[in-house]
Length: 101
Image (cartoon, rainbow, N blue to C red; front, side, top):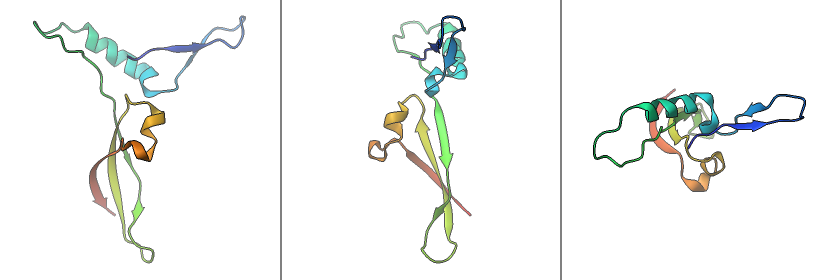
């Protein structure tokens, strides 16, 4: 579930909102509230969640010599922890397509 995290550096200062993960962002919290405020379908006990889709691309060189390159498009699920998502061994990146340069 999305949540807000606050940090208060000093008793005299107001608390500051800390955004460390995608699911602590204001946009994620707003969408979460929007989904949960909608009426539920009768006889449905499924949980409703917001799936944060993140797309990423970067140029990949195909040869040691020359300028052959492609732009792969990858999809990540933002609800997953960034510490797991960023590990290559977690296989969190889902390949969508290649765009020729």
